[in-house]
Length: 274
Image 1 (cartoon, rainbow, N blue to C red):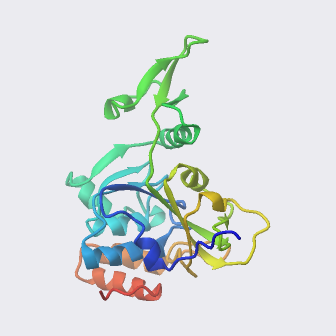
Image 2: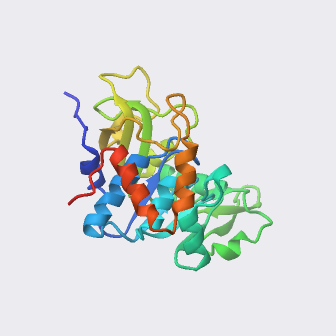
């Protein structure tokens, strides 16, 4: 019989190591972000001050990442974009980055894509023409240049990107962790193949899927979290909640912000009591 991987949101949040770790968060900008999971991790941190010293890995980072930065849980960020699109800058990240209080690993779409591909391929680097003619090498001395042994051409050698835990939000999944994530997939499939541990939150759990974007063999836990991406969108099931997103930006840095996050936790049935 196939293994049933269903866990509660609280149990899944406990899978994140208390020590320094790399967490990959799925979704794109303000679409299909694992908001319920980030809030559950925030609640855990309020109780125990753990996890901390997180490295956040995301193709693009948004609300789900900024709330963890604001809680003081993040020491390093690896993403090619950190913001809230039409709603402006990600307030906590922008503030801490401006003060030099958070480490930023300079990334582009190419460096993330090729770094993940190198990990999946189990090779020491992935060659590319990206970054040629730029000054990005000054910001990333770990990224080297190599000579193509066949053509003699100089290429960029992007090193592998490691990921301890990937958290992805799906439209639906089965108890074994097979999941459908919809059309705008970002790098979710790549994160699932790179991470040591994969957690899938989903709008609903069904008995069986006919097809799957994420295969259950790489998934360690699946959590049913209806509206688990709110206030970000989960097309075609529900749209972005613009008013809630605007409230987040307006209250950031004020005494009202913790009340807002408490209300969001309550909306996701996340307890803030010990």
